[in-house]
Image (cartoon, rainbow, N blue to C red; front, side, top):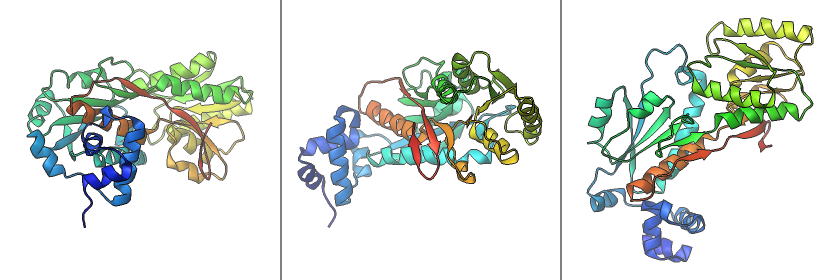
Length: 327
């Protein structure tokens, strides 16, 4: 027998109306009540009737998950297959939020304002993935339906944003090395003039180590590691650096695999590649799953008349090993 909303309410010790609000206006329910309802629903195997919800609203019943086509950029991390895991984490977070609602999720890629406007006739709201320039963010301004943008948007002050604090992430990298007694770190980065996330991470790191050695490289390109490897070997042999930080895990891990060393090191992204190493590896986790879960919940709340909020999901320093430990 299919469980009902009333059964969920009885088990969670709340009203049927509260159950309805959890699945349709989750932002209007306290975290304690929402957790109790979701736990009861999971135990009973209850899922909201998405078709019924659509009819009540007289809408499409669809949330559009939109990716902006990046075009010809000298560097975009999302085009690298080695970052596919990030997309997976984001989707798991969105999936969790969508299950709590009466909306369905559909996927779209667009490259212009005109395409976005046309899309508004096919959905009730838009959740935008990896909007990372102000020009991209401005494409959404004036749309006739609610939208939430994520996740590299520190410089864009519109209220429709859920973003990660890359400056704080860079500070966390610096503090990790500072607490280990390091005084002469090398920071490996690239494209800081065009990739704002890289610029902000470096800014945060330099706030801790203003005199750090900086290596700008074409990170992510096929032969970039050769130049990085040669540079680092020379600096280590001359004892001019005592630690290493990198703008992403991919760059740091490739370096450490080709040149094992005992210098304190810290990456960024908390990627799954840490399993290549026998011991703990330090990194910064932007918590993409949590970030996109919050973004999706925010959109559902706005669709139901909730307040638009600009929120930051703070990154965390992690030691990656047999289990993920937050420092």
